[in-house]
Amino acid sequence: MDWWWKTLIGIGVGLVLIWVALLIALLVAKPGRGQLKEALRLLPDLLRLLRRLAADRSLPRGVRVRLGLLIAYLAVPFDLIPDFIPVLGYADDAIIVVAALRSTVRRAGLDAVRAHWPGTDDGFAALCRLTGLDR
Image (cartoon, rainbow, N blue to C red; front, top):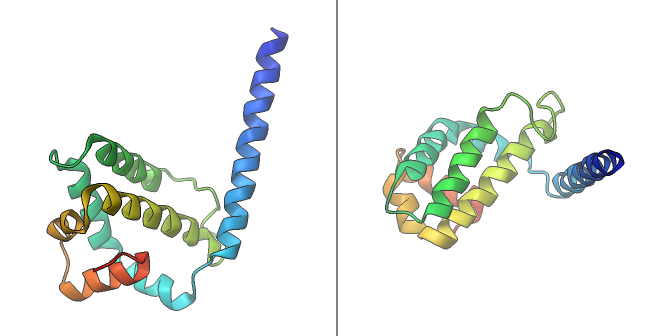
């Protein structure tokens, strides 16, 4: 039974170290207020985009699984950094969404993301600007 506690403590320490590393990454890469406001305006279209991409059977399975996990993460009421912390509280969600979208574009292509975008062309341009995706 002793090995069970050592394993559990090791997993707990590993999770804390990962959380601290992500917190440091967020502090370094924190977005400006203008970028957060623009991202919040895109939120409804972005959520529809994620749902549509996750449901598209023509995309690779790994992409769909990754997007499904992202949707689940966004739906869970707790975050890596609580939302009541100014700027950083929402920045962790934004950074995770950007990473997932970049990964989707690398595997499925920007055309797949564009085909499922439910918003306007200006909204898609803003999404590309915020995520650093090539148009």
